[in-house]
Length: 297
Image 1 (cartoon, rainbow, N blue to C red):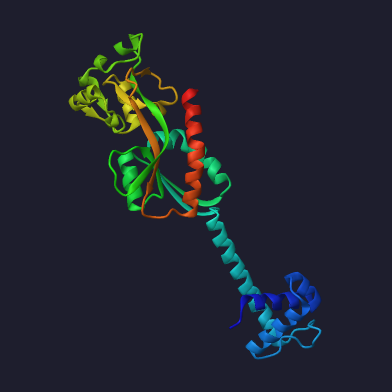
Image 2 (cartoon, helix red, strand yellow):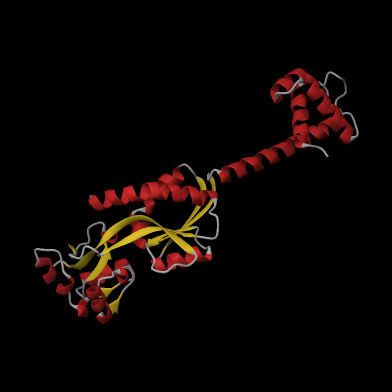
């Protein structure tokens, strides 16, 4: 069997025109190079050089040089691709995230992460926490970013950050005239607009309000539009409401427990790809700091 390293030695000798320079190039002794060439010729079944000086190829040698170069290029390219994949420089990454993180945090995070990995293929799904979990469990997404789930199952949760819930209402609503944080008892169930995020609030007072609510909206843009139109108020995480919303007010809630934990969602039973492992480490380091910066500004 012809070994790749023997081909590499032969090509080096053919390009160098002598054994001494070729031996220096491949880091072997001249006698070892000569022996490799002899074994290669025996394996092929014919001479590769016209003379012992190794500066002139036979017709078989010329054919061997062309094919040898092609094989070496192909092998080296394959090894390069495998190493790039192992070191997370290439590959594909699929991330499922709740909208607040996808809109306000991930653009900056992904820009920095992909800057050093320009050949990585990226896919981002902007969905609610329940769907994030399902996409990770099914393997459609490599990693998820969502609120903590009450249930167990095939995924595990690693905390990234917490943010408090805020109340969003029309800027001329009576709640805006309170000179203190809003209590649950200040709210009217008939005008509460439910959403997926607020369903995670554990306070019994809020749960009672929620069960009596007549409207449920899951899209943040639609929620803001309905609040602005005076259809009611809603409760959302702070990160969701970054940036000014003309015509609406963002008020603090008195309940200290009105907060959510957001973290990474990963499958328990499947080892992550190198690129997913690299993103996980990057996210754990960078996302908490960026969230703290955005919420404090």
